[in-house]
Image 1 (tube, rainbow, N blue to C red):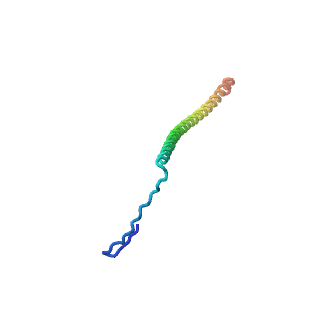
Image 2: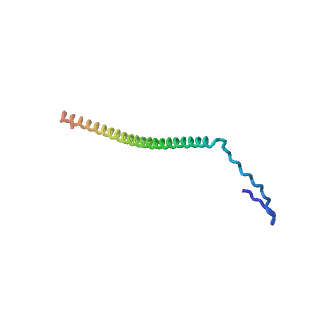
Image 3: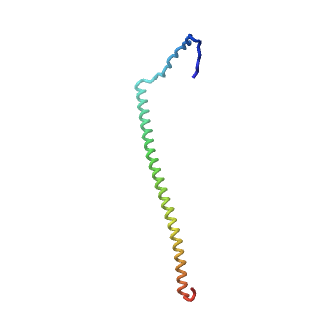
Length: 109
């Protein structure tokens, strides 16, 4: 934005009117231009279909990742449960050994 000041009562000088910018005119025949546009529309449709297919594929992949994470969580819980049961079995085995030992040697408490 540029501000220009003029003496009071005078009118600003008239700018020359810019000539309209000439538009690029097509040197192609209307049939050729129409077939080019049809090809562009076909390609655009194919690109949109590919985009939609990829979006669906991405959604499926995200669902698989979520399922995989859930399986990993369940596997971690199962491993923790197995470790807990292993410790419990070891404790019970030790207790059973003490009971057997006492049964064989009743004189030693």
